[in-house]
Length: 398
Image (cartoon, rainbow, N blue to C red):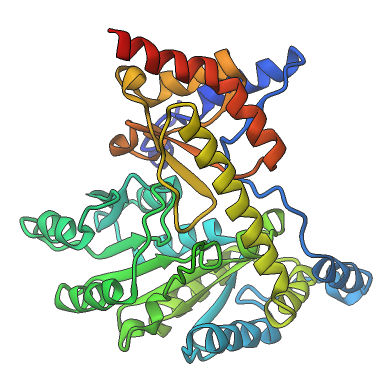
């Protein structure tokens, strides 16, 4: 048999074990309360859907589109950045539409990574951030990231002994899964660091709108000179609850955007044109739907975090993302995250994502995705109470 090196470099899919248990439980007729995957459950706002239906009824929109995205959508992207962040984006040279963030990240790494290039990512992190570099035949270096850490210090400590220097740093704030958030001075220091070290910055800004308690995530591109060293990605999946539509974009450095445009011209014809047309309405239309989506996630966050606290599992309320990154209670820590996640599923019918699936440094945690409504979150707390409360009580008694 032939060997496919890109495939053999990929590790086993850690989440598969939990997915198989979920499937088996459902086949037995059991009700699984599933916080495992960050798959938004809220409906896409009606005015966006209506535009999709209208555009899809026009036969002209069923033809091949443009791999870089239609002109009016790229203009809408540029206008959105101007309104949101006071950042000027050239829609022709500095913006490109992608078929969701994962496609954008994967093809971007394929475009700018040479075999053997060093690609740095936080650990733990969203898996595609790691494996986009792997699939592009780069060598991935992990930089520790945790609440309370100084990520820039960690970055300097990792890069100092390395030669040749890493080429790319791929990161995301607000961060999945740790929910770490940053401020504009962080990006100012990061951009200066990138310039000093000839480093390309790729910032995945997927959770730009999912922020709570008055926190407003900054765009990396707000920093003067940021476009000299990097690009930023955004997806409509979370802000507008359009995950299955697969639409996003990359903006920033024209050379990097140009490299992605060139490689996409060989690989795809762009997203289905009615989806692009509806996305213009999403970006340019009323934004109260985004506020409503944000509030729903905040209510779910509060219900989950406060409920876990009441049963003896204190967790930090995140300021951003649609996740809760929960440290495994001391009574269960020796199990590791994969065994703990499977234990919870078997004993309580509550599914969570094991932290090890996001990297070795995530193994002391599990991730809850806020994709169940408040009623089901309360039911999950009731299911968890005997197990978590019992474990804490047994540890105290011991």
